[in-house]
Length: 245
Image (cartoon, rainbow, N blue to C red):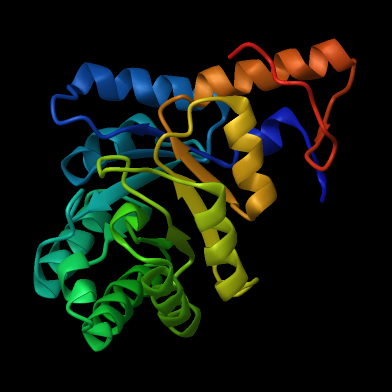
């Protein structure tokens, strides 16, 4: 495993505010924090795409729009329109939720068609696409099957959760997803990641991106850990004592 600097860790974080009552002022705070900590992306509801894109203009921080969030219970055509609309208004990353009902119906052809069409729109526009599984509602076999579809379709990331379901990311789910897709597709862990120990565990399990609202707290804890050890990097294979979070 490589050694990570603070900036390496920051560039793995999608700084998140997906609250229904998030205001324009909240978006400014989110984007200002993303600039200060050099996070990779701000994760926001689709309707905030233009606001955040404008606030982040001239930076290397992406605007990530959540599509059919958090339930995934809209038609493929609706998801296609919303994806195009988000990109039109400045989103340069897309996270969409699969149709869990169709997955539970065993309609894997639908899941593959949905994924293929949304990934095609994103890649046509040069925009990364992340596919949200919402693993808390899925069996291990279902997670494995959707990951196999993703390995064929090749979105940029498969993602554990919205953070709005009955459960979030687990190390076991990240490891399972990574074991299926290998290096073909990256894994994003999201949902309930609130401290640096969990953050490091997700990376060690195979996550390349972390979605969370606790990014500042996590980065400050990692800085403290480096200060205590008098180092400028962290080797995630090395055992570290847990810090007060």
